[in-house]
Structures are given as C-alpha cells and as structure tokens.
Amino acid sequence: MSVNQRIVADLVSNNVSFVTTVPCKQLAGVIELIDKSEEIFHIPSNKEDEGMGLCAGAYMGGKRSAIIMQNTAIGVTINTLATLIQYYHIPLPMLISYRGELGEPVACQVEMAVHTKALLRQLHIPTYHFHHPDDAQELDAILKYCYMSKKPVAILTDASFWKGA
Amino acid sequence: MIRSEVLKQLIPVISDHLVVCNIGLPSQELHMLDDQPSNFYMLGTMGLASSIGLGLALSQPQKVISIDGDGSVLTNFGTLPTIANNVADNFILLIIDNGSYGSTGDQPTYAGMKTSLTAVATACGCENVVECRGENAVETVQAALDSDRMTIIVCKCDSGNIKVPVIDMDPVVIRDRFMKEIDRRNA
Image (tube, rainbow over all chains, first blue to last red; front, side):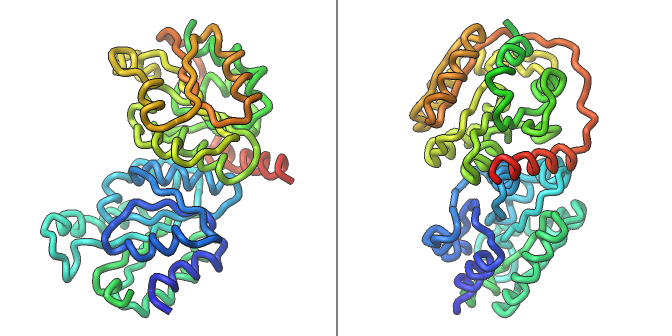
C-alpha cells in the first residue's frame, strides 16, 4: 500500500467523510485519491481559512472533516484557528505539506518553513512530523486523538516522507 | 431601513431554520431578537459565515440560512466560487448589504460604491442570485425557502446600528446546543 493509499484508508476507517484541500505539488497524489474516493466528499477551497469554515460547518452537521494544505497556510489561518477552531472546540486534522525542508528546490519555501513549528507551538497545536514513509503508521492514532480532544492537530509531511509515496 | 429592522422583520421567516450568523452586530441583534438553539453565532473570524453555512448544508438535510454582510463577503470572496460549484439546495446565503462595515463604525465598503455583489455572485457561477431591498426581504427569503433551490440573496439596506448587548454565552455552549438541535431535527 502506498503512503497516499494508506492516508486515505486511515481517513476512511476513522469516518472522515468531508475533506477540503488547497493543493501542493507534494499533495497531488493524495488529493487525487481523495477526489476519487466514494466515502469522502471532496470540496476544494480557494483559501485555507475558507476551508476551515467549511470543515467547521460539516463537523456541526455530523460529519468528521479534515483539511489538506501547505505549511504556508499556517500564516493565512492563525486567526481562524484561534477564534473558530480552538475557541469553539472543533476537531480538525490538518494534513500539511511541509515545504522548505531538506530537498526543497524553491528558496522562498524555506521562509515559512522556519516559522512553521514555532507558530504551531505558539498556538498550542499538537504537531507531528512525518519524515520517513513508515511514520504514516501513526496517522490512525493521531486522527483518533484529534477527535477525542476536539482540537486542531497538525501533521507535517516533508519531502523525505513523500519520496515513499 | 437598517439591518436590525431587516432582521426583526425576518424573524418569523427564519426562526424555524438553522441560522449561521455573521460576527459582530448581526449576531448580537439576532441573539437579542430571537435567541434559540438553532442559531449559531460567530464571535470571531470575520468572513466565514457563508463557508460554515455551506459546510453544514452539504453535511445534513435541514435548511441552513447564513446571514452574512457585504464587508464579510468582500473579505472572503473565494467563498462564492466554492458555493457556486458545490450546490446545496438546502442553503440560502443572505447577504445584508448596507454598504458599510457596521460593527466597526460604518466605514464604507466597496459594495456600497462600484462593486455589485449580485454581479460578482452571478459571475462566480451562482445560479439563483436575487437582489432585493430591505423592505422586500421577508417575501424574498420566504420565496427562496419555498423554492428548495440554493439561493444567494443580496439585500440592500441603509447603514446604521442600534445599541445591542454583547453575547456572553461561551462559544462551546453555542456550538454544543446548536449541534444537539441539529441532531434532534435529523433524528
């Protein structure tokens, strides 16, 4: 099973049925599988804060939701994370493409990479960093932890991780 | 006619439905006029009432009305293409367009100048876009509810505010009673 297949299988087995995405090159494969999945309603969003609003609405409507986005989006969504997702205790798994790490070809991506973990720590968001393809084994437990705690949870997935996709 | 008067007239029409209400004075006015578990008040996060309402409408069968403002739609313009391309016939987006940022001191918005939100929503691909005056809000919202089709309503009214108390309910209480009400209606 590829990393992409494993991620989608874990989302489905945890009853995540509403997923919004803003694309990243590293996420292309998993987004394609989510779009094809019959168990998951895929709704692309134009900006990540909009996507978090969609996820909050879906959660209140009884569906487990998740967002897939790039780490640059942390800069876009801090207010939404603090005043909607955290303030109202809404569980939100965030599968995040961690651009700007080892192997990164685009220098500008490093500029947000150096702030990513610091911002997540400042927001008190539980954060997991997938570096090896085997790290995907933790996703199932992370999703359960997210819905148990009703918190946003960040899963940073770097270029080394996606080499196994 | 100002927004609080529009909302007051609308209460009998919207009271039986799930309502996601915009941050600031609109939520405070709705809370004062008709507080009930079927209302979700946004205490922060300007711009996301339409997104939350769409996500909710796509995820369960009850009708959902998002009460939004022109300033909030302008700050989250990306919502209109998403709405247009993910049709939920149980969703009504009611944009109270008073051409101003009411909660922050009535500063003018571009929607009160050259920009037509009706034209923008139509250009984004929304199929049922209706513009009305505040005086016609009741029949326009009722017609949208009766149509069973996703509708975007741009309700033009005057700028201005009344004094309303802030909402002191905890956000988790607002969210929890809203979800329990949704569960009850869908049981």
